[in-house]
Image (tube, rainbow, N blue to C red; front, top):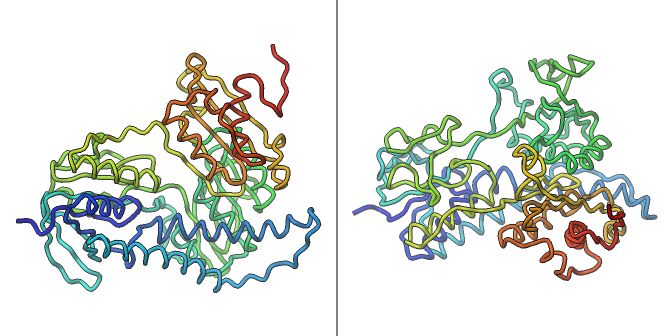
Length: 469
């Protein structure tokens, strides 16, 4: 007999929900995680600590902005040690909660690195070097992903950081270079800029956040221009040279000053799935060229004993996608008619303003040659946005011109990440434009902008007047 019915390899936002759901379904579950604390990158070195620091950044920025409203504060005194301790306390409380839930549910938590010896056996190696074997009937692989650092930039110097190093908040550099204009780079740049660093962003393409619609990026880009020292588009980092006075960065592209000096460099150009060094060559699992494990709609790999979820199972690499997959894979294991077929997975960039979208984007529709109806509701016409003095936002709805079904939602503005859930629900429920337009929204709220965008698609937005053609 096997040592356990189900082993879950990886205790992140996909792994521990899968372990809990399986235990709730009556399975004997072992959760194997090599971290000191469960929760994976998201909880320990990603989503949660970054949002704690972004909250600090927002408070600092708002204390300056409030002078325009008649409330003036003294410049903030930054205690970097206390900020770091507070961030760590937040993480500690949440990881402790996971440990408590493991005990409550009867999930055995093993702190070790797991390597497959075959399709039903793991070798476990602890941090102290002790090894043992664990046999199982089924396994769910949820090992996540790691930051990518291009070869020429892979230099052993503590001043050259990935996202984990940036979140450690060792100090506040006077000059910080962020390589990559994606969501991780912009979020961490926002934190350091608020704390006092002169932040420069280098992006190879002609715009920030390449995956998002340009009309949604513009308000964010405009605010970043005022908060950061500089944003260099169509620019590439060719070389990093560590020196006594800092890191000399050699640049190419549309930039006048080709050589610049920085105190620290954050490299945030993407992530790759953690599928290597797992012993998968000892199983029947197939891996794509990008390193993802091939899975079907029940998250089963090409090995009958192994499933995979989260970053290691394919794009998008988002924590909430992993959590959703966890439910699907456990229901499938339990014999229920479950399958992974979401219509909308929300993406959120927690900058200031936040940017969120789900479903079909306008850029995707254009690339597919697909005809859609689009309406953008400007937050300047929102009473609630006016009271917050944050009118730069936009709420956009995209619909099918034949069926009036809502196909996509995009929002840029304060709290966009909280608002996008209504858009996801509308798309998943196949809601039509009229369904949203005739749903009563509380006033005054930012969520009203979704209702008014729907009204705009119908041609009669209350607070936006356009002459009919």
